Length: 458
Image (cartoon, rainbow, N blue to C red):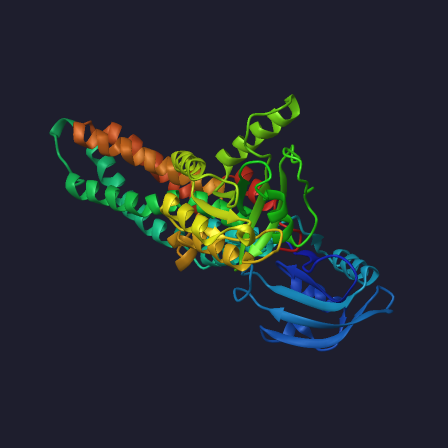
């Protein structure tokens, strides 16, 4: 653990509020704050204690009455000496305090610099550090749960342990290179193979979880498709409880995609209303239908909405078969239940041979059933349901797949009886990816790129 030059920043959101919190961290931060504080001598106070007093200008005028909390190294977020100043949330007061702190020797912090220092001082690894930013920006229960899991260690602790075991084997393989002419084998090949298989067993669920994790972090892209006048725009308006899309009896009214967000059971859905699927009557409608098909390809969930009153059994059967061929998770939603006979409803259910969620978008009835079905469809993914480790970061996904690719090459080489130098080369690539993932191997450019995305004061 080491302490760098003192830095200071506003830790709460900018703007007028009841209180604001400023954070100071680094060597001499307690002494710097003490020089502008009138109250108890902060340099003599225990860690994790709060003290009331005033902050003063250079000529002794009161800036504000404040509450100062002292955190002594290494028992702080950054593992450095840290002071947090709670003051009134006036922009003028905040700037005056920051000015005084810089006059006494602190400098203004860069974005993410407090978290970067926590990482450099071993408070947590790089995956956990990035989870801090995800936790701050989480806007749903699912994204909050995923970020919190990573902040608490998630999958990185397990990977660090397996990486260390792989390092030990690589050392033995490279030792064999010094005895190349003697045909000795220090690294037992069966044990090495088993270790690589164990690592891949850990990697695969994480790699597979990225599509789910990305949806959790950015919202589940949910496209509503169907024929013109099936009620797609009416349904979108009903779910959002606002007139988001134009509703008309004229087929082909929706010419472009319309998107908005809806939170259901702590999950953010990005609802996408699309142009009706049919033979286009003009060039503009053709473009809209092409965009519908593209959105369907890009979506994580498809809602196929059909007019239960006017659709034929043959048309429903063909549409369901086409959706199944797409390979996308989907829900069948029958609209205009209020105008449907029981006989027609039972016939369509027998043709679909799977559950249909029945609603009346215009009457706004049974929408809760649809919301429950949407939530249940997403929660069938075990990662969302159980809170297991989920990969939400593209950088993590890249290094996980890079590790797996290197291990596949190493396993193939092992089966082919390659020489230790070729085997060691692939193992080193796997180690590099694992090290860059958790931050055991870093560059200044990588750290600057990651932490520059944080807010100032964190």
